[in-house]
Image (cartoon, rainbow over all chains, first blue to last red):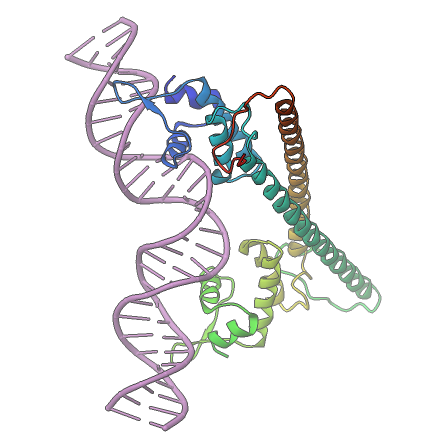
Length: 142
Length: 142
DNA sequence: GCTTGCCTTGACGTCGGCGTCAAGGACTAC
DNA sequence: GTAGTCCTTGACGCCGACGTCAAGGCAAGC
């Protein structure tokens, strides 16, 4: 199988495969003509990489999984180094999710507060009838 | 106030301020000597930018807030355009958190599965006494 | 032979938010 | 005058995972 076919079967591009090779992640044999040659096992490795990439792993983090498969293990995560990556990733994910939830809460509060302030100002304007300042950007047409 | 002082008071760098100016976000007046000159109001704008940046807003998303303050409003989020940014951000955050939680769950499952497979293999090895394959990377020393 | 399509390497571009020089001007203190 | 500290603009570097273009080789069909 040549590079184009492998890329197509893995749903990626030839550029990506050459990039992986340049990183030493997915080296290729060469045919007489200099073309890269791959087999089903390479497709397996590539799919492992892509799956982890979809999970947000960086390339370097996929390396233990690839090495593990290449060492003949049935799964990319059959090796301790891969499990370590999983665990580290779980920690990172938990930390990140925590931060994002905190940010979400704060932004939510800001929105609520700002909306209340706006409504209070609008109510004020109705009674004493003072001309309130108006935003020029997307300002209310009224 | 010159650029160095403003940067220090906002806990950022002069490079950052020049960058904001280059983006048209925080223009500066100039003294006779060509030095940038800022006042307390600029500090206010800058702090608004920094707060939002800390929340993970990109620079462009802070623009409505800055424009709003510059238009004379009491808060950066006193304008509808700012509220829209808040709302959009909340949506993005919710989506992102959802994705991350999904990924977290999947990675967690993978880890559990892989550990079970490893333990099953280890138990097998104890009884029939077959030499199991060993990982070369961080493999067990035994 | 000629076109078409796949392949090769090399190298520059992308995105965001700055960091990090480099070369030189302005101002203060001694 | 000169040392030191601030300021100026300009420009390249960084990070990750590729995209994209250029110039040219190899193979197959007509």
